[in-house]
Structures are given as structure tokens and as C-alpha cells.
Length: 448
Ligand code: 5GP
Ligand code: SF4
Ligand code: MG
Image (tube, rainbow, N blue to C red):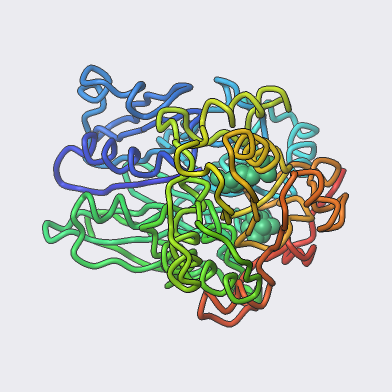
């Protein structure tokens, strides 16, 4: 998911709209905005894309100088209307709104306990549990309420919230999901999942919120607090592999440069003779550029992409996923014919994309297709906010690399090593969560 919050002296509706639009890649199922008009919260949220939901009528209704927004991609709780964020509530007369990126691992246990106490939930999402706890603990001191909430919930959460028109943001102690904050010359404060919204709105300086940091913004300015914890930093490395946009620089790593360096490193780890390096657009493009420039093999566009389809991987059935890949990517016979091709993608999850593409590239005349993947095999599910299927459906959890090569129909198949991927980050490896690759979960999942 993607979250944004803006505190200003003028209307925030348009800025929220621009900001949410540049977070669209983080979730395409639904979107919503809540603004505070000085007395109460106003909400617009629906299934669909930001551009389709917010026309001038909706935006005009959302007048107010503080607001938050959310784009959703579902992890806990299905893709239904009642699960759309931000969530809103009135608690002891206070107007509360909240948007969440991440996934709590203990939400089921907390929910059951709360239900036994008589609480009735209106959504199926983990976020509502967090929202409920925040409201329950919310007396005078917002920071105390956030700290109590943080002591109850486990897992991944980057949150922007609004309480009686104060903007509140906090990040889990591991720092799984990104969250950046910045200020414009006019004194507007913007908090968002990535830096692009801040750059578009025009902040003059920005920084990452620290893991465990709590920020409250009101007319007196910004105050920052710390949730005490000995949890280590564990940024999701998959943000850099795939999830964040190429222009994201979060937790001091630029996604484009990371991807490019992964391609360079893989060109040494898994060299092969070929005529062209072809990316699977868009997620494989920076890595393919790195692979091509480093190996000296020419880069080429060998797949035409339908840009109006969005991210395809969360389609519910195999058949739909196959059809989606087909509609989304079509081989360029004129480029591929009689050529030995290196195809570069960011990851193999189920194997649907690569099997389908390689078969169709060969039909289009490619002589050889060598698959190069710039992340290690995904062998374990994610419990912290990325929608990987369970192990049964993860191709790398069930087959050897040679078996996978055969299944996807490649002439050769290689993945970057874990060491190579860490090297590309230019950071020490222990600051990352890498659990989907190595099963080493920073916070133990609770499997009911
Ligand atoms: P596959 O077809 O192997 O299941 O998916 C691989 C493709 O899906 C890659 O091109 C990758 O860009 C994309 N992908 C990225 N993130 C995810 C994710 O969280 N889940 C899934 N299933 N696919 C993803
Ligand atoms: Fe990211 Fe993988 Fe960790 Fe999930 S398990 S937070 S996708 S690195
Ligand atoms: Mg892709």
C-alpha cells in the first residue's frame, strides 16, 4: 500500500491527489482521502484508481487544510469495498482517521480478544485492530496512545493518522515499510511512503522517519518522539527489488541504482553468450540496463507493454494471471527473430510470467532464451505487507533451479546470489528483512 499525509495552511485536496497519484504503483485496488475541515473529517474512498475516483466534484467536497490518503493492495482482508482505507472513527468526541502500509502479524489474536470483549468490527483488515487500540488509548496525550498501541501490535506498519486535525505519523520499530517526511518553504509538512509525492508537492528538505519514530504535527510545529525498543532495523529488501518506484530513495538506498547494480553483478555471476539483453518491463528494466552495459551485450526492447493494465500479479486464479500476462506483454518478433536472448526480470514468484513469456518469445522466433533474475529465488511467504502466495504456489519452494528452468522453458536460468544482492545495496546485509528469500523472519509469524 501507499500512504500520505499533509499538514498545511491552505487546502490540501489537490496536493493529496497529486501525491496519491504518484504512489499508485503501491496499490491499485482502492484509494481514499480524508480531510479535516476545522470541525470534522470528510471522506471519499472507493474501489479503483486514484484518477477514476477523484474528479473535481470529489476534490471540491474535500476542502480542508489537513488530510491523509491511501492506495491499497490487499494483504490481510480481501479486495472488497468495506476494506477500503483510510479508516475513520469518532472516539470520545474526537475525529480520528488512519491509513496503514504493512501487515500486522498478531491482528487475528488481538481481534479475537477484542471481539470477546464485545467489540464489533466493520472491516476484515488488520488496520482496524490498530485503529481500535489507538482510539481506546486516546485520552489527552496522543503520543502516549500511539506508544501503547505500538506495544500491542506486532509486524509491519507505516502509519499516517489524523486526530482532531493534528497529523500523526509513526513507523514500526523494525522499519519494514518506508516512510519519509519533508517540509515546503511555506511550512507545509508532507509525510508519505516514498519521496516522489514530496518532490512533486515541492518540499525543500526531507528525511526518512526512523524505525520506531512518532511524529505529531500541529500549529505549534513538528514534535518527534521515540518508541523505545531493542528491535533491530529490518527494511524490506523487496521494496528495492520490485515494490518501490525507480525514483524512490528510501532509507538511504535508491531503487534505480540498486536495480542497476544487481544487473551488473548478475552479469558477472551468470555470464552467457547472447546477442541481446531484453528486460521484462518495467520491473526488469533498470537491471537489464546494468546487465547489458556491464556485459557489453546490446540492450533491446523485445516485449511491448500495455501500459494501461496495472500490476498483474494479484489476479485471483492461474488462468486469469496467464491471460493478464498475455495482454500485458507481447513479444516483438522483428527484434527477437533468430537471436539469442538474455531476458532479465526482477523476481520469479509463481513462475507464470516467465513460463508464458519464454514460450511466446520462442514462437516469435527467438533462437535461445536465457533467463536472468535479479533477486534470489522466493521460497517463503511474506507476512509484512507484500502479497506473496503460500509455499505451495511459490515455484522456488517446490522445485530445484534445474527443474524450474525446464518448467519455464528457458535455455538457462540463473538468480543473483544473496551476497550479490546485498552488495548492490551498498549497505550491511543485516539492516534488511530478507525473509522471503531465506526464511529468516525478523518477527515470528503467528500462524493460526
Ligand atoms: P510470477 O509470474 O513468477 O508469479 O511473478 C513474477 C513477476 O511478478 C515479476 O515480473 C515481478 O515483477 C512481479 N511481482 C512483483 N512482486 C510481486 C509480488 O509481491 N507477488 C507476486 N506474485 N508477483 C510479484
Ligand atoms: Fe520484504 Fe520479503 Fe521481508 Fe516481506 S519477507 S518484508 S517481501 S523482504
Ligand atoms: Mg514484473
